[in-house]
Length: 157
Image 1 (cartoon, rainbow, N blue to C red):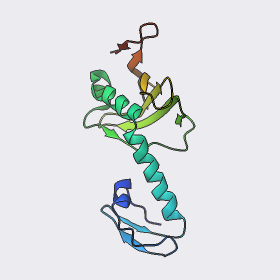
Image 2: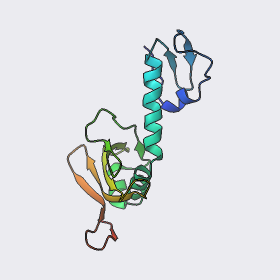
Image 3: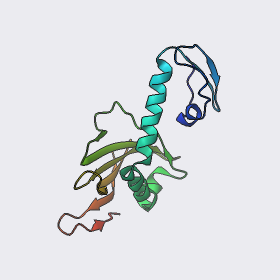
Image 4: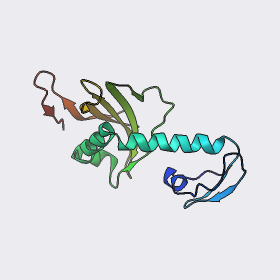
């Protein structure tokens, strides 16, 4: 089976093909042969990825990473953010807590941006609790930590 490299390519495809048809679809970055439920599964996976990438806690964590010189120096620029591994048990979101492990890489190194965020009640604003970068060599770089008593943001460098 040929796979399209990015979820964006699939989301831009024309919806003229039905689920049950076998169709060859040309995307921006490759080819995909649709066979039964495989198309639905991959499309669902991409939609979940897109939802995560738009979430406040995800965006806040990436802002912290982009503003942290030591982390950027360790990874190198340009920085690449990859799709979450949805089957990883570390990735967990419920009504009040979010915990993610975002794969990131650069020319110098790669690793995972660990994110812990919470909110007081449903439909309230998400607040980052902790963000740290764990590189493939085991080095851990604290990027952000919320101070316990005051609720003020504290950056570690």
